[in-house]
Amino acid sequence: MARLKVTQVKSYIGSKQNHRDTLRSLGLRRVNDTVVKEDRPEIRGMVHTVRHLVTVEEVD
Image: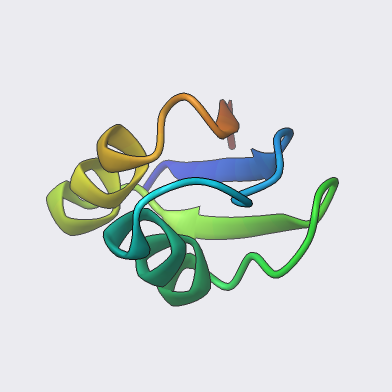
């Protein structure tokens, strides 16, 4: 199964509480933090919510 490498590239300061909670759920705490998650619809939805704060790469 494919995996996604999610990196936080912008700060969450000034963003909505929902976006902060989503970043925390993904396991991202500060700028330049990176996590690797399974490519599932739930993860894709969370990434879509904070797409302006993160970058996403597909990893094999």
